[in-house]
Length: 395
Image 1 (tube, rainbow, N blue to C red):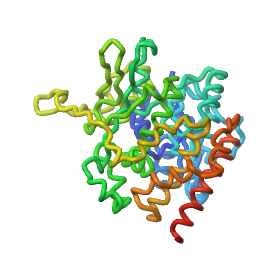
Image 2 (cartoon, one colour):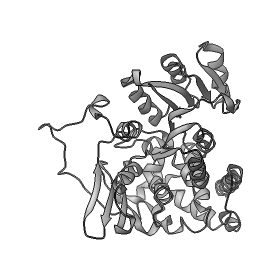
Image 3 (cartoon, rainbow, N blue to C red):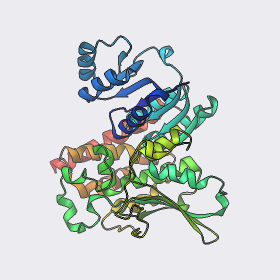
């Protein structure tokens, strides 16, 4: 019997890697639902190739164009998630990979219809973990994180008592500016920041990776997913991006997981419950002696002068909704940087402005009980940040 699969964010890097796996094992899969934003060409290609029962397009202009030009009888095309929920079909696997807070509602919506939810959207966990956890328990949906770091932590924690752990390290490549002089970061252009040396990713996550904001968010994610004290979580620079997480045990031993810099590995293992031969999906990268490199693994402390955002770690747990505020503000800062309205090295300064705002605590102490209350905090954060940027630009 074929596995049914739904993919939220089918035109992004995670979605494309998932479809690569599906393509390699066509006879094993049936696509229930695909969702994307505005890549018209890819959307049309995916409808024609995979013939999903439902395709959701988030961009209104692109939706109208797809609806007009694609007359595929087997695929129903909808704008955003505005359709009768009763037409949703249960899936064996749902991959949640819509970036940003925009991915929260679709992720929550599909929990009920999914046996297994593979989450790549860290913002959903950061902002809505309590809701996701409650719903997954109610509908008996298995949650699997597929960020390489959190997938590795999950594997390292199997058969491991939390009480035996001294520290968990999430690795960071250091991005394109690892060897930059901090004084030059002010002049970094968006096209430079999105050129990640190891991973092929979208613009948002590439910017987050270049200044290590992604690691701050991943610390929050790990804390929520694995119920680990933030004090036991840390970040280490690993330029080779081959080791994705390290566990330091109290007995003096260290454990780590090593794999190539491709999301196909955690995705395929999550989809098939580790019962795979990875060479069915990718060709392993070997050196001249046909063996993996284990001798050139470097690990460095984070330079806080070069990556000042790391100094915010101590404030991540300041109040219950601080992570929601930090996430929202960061999305605005990335957007403004890509539009060349703020400098690359101004992220830390702007985040401090919001964390020191006179109304910050009023929103940060809130405990949201539903998505609308999460959005209320998110919208306040975005509006205040936009106003601060505007005032600064007019000064």
